[in-house]
Length: 193
Image (cartoon, rainbow, N blue to C red; front, side, top):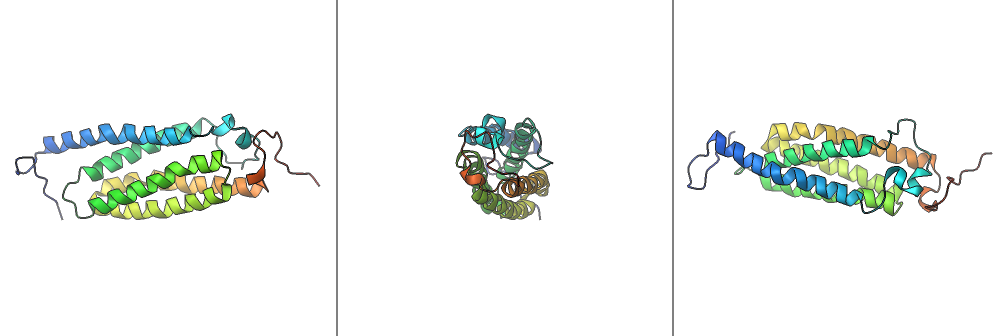
């Protein structure tokens, strides 16, 4: 089923008009995603800048600190493009629910970093990652009904969320009492037997 896009005069929009509209959307969605994502991450120090996190035992597959901003930059760009594709799909039947679910998952996404790094709520952060994955799966299904390519673009994000859940779980398992570890502590409060 193919939707018909109409221009301001009520006629059918040309490919050039549709492309221009998509580019206008990306000019808003990509910078918006990057600003929101990195703004949320700056609410509390992350990585080795965070003394609490630096003191934790990390899983063997924990990437170096520089990987996270690179990965999130790419993911936010991808999310911005996927959102622009959906916003540009005027007249698509599930466009509005897809956009609503997108912003729902975005709220969850933006809450994770302050929750984990700032409030040290590792268990709640793990639950949040699981919830984010579920909402993102729903979003992927809705996106697939509007623009198939937009849904495909979400696959790296889904994979990253699974990896984030693994890291979150492993940090919890490797650091008993992680939520009560003092931020300035140089030990994980684990005693050798």
